[in-house]
Image (cartoon, rainbow, N blue to C red; front, side, top):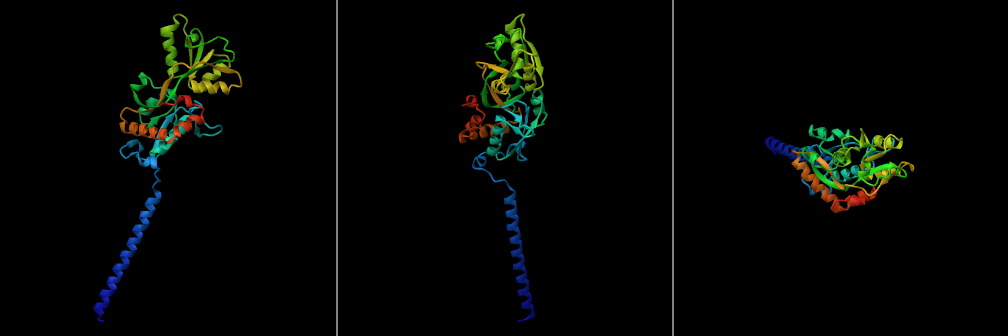
Length: 290
């Protein structure tokens, strides 16, 4: 065989070897890419989030006032959020195939912070009403009444909202209950107004009742019920719970795509049975939306 033929054969073997090496490298690269992509659940695969800018980083950032047990609170001695809203948010995020992170923020400023892009959504036992609906959009997820917490024995014989006229009532700042007490003064109480005392968090408002500063605390019924349970017999809840109204996950007015996929994910969570499981865990089955 001539030297030129040997040269051609050697060159051909070199090309084939190089091709094999490149193919192996490409295969390894494909495996690496596959391994770093989170596995999609069957539910998340059915929800297209590719057009949702808030979820482009694979995370749903939620603003919440994490001091409103049993809806949202920190596990004792930790900075780990817990509660019905937290569990439901995790289930929604799982349906979307993203992670979820909670950001603790004062309730009164949640929607303002949402509209300045501090988080993607708000999930904080927020009752849907006309004023809030002017500045944010909502995805309804629960239907919850309100509760009046009083000292055990109900010394002022409060039987409903009208019974608060002339009394001192502790309430969390920025809540629909604060607004409701102001409306009560304008429309019902006449010259016998409720003295409204506001606090940054509901636990502080409850403590004001416990220590005799206020005659009652007005909050959402699940919270009021738990506050009475945890009071070691010092407090009770006036029943029945007035004004059942829906809670909503708040999103910015321009977040049409996010609102759409959150609505779809919530429906998927309901269809899977996870919604009922979460409500049952917190003994709040009666708050379910159809």
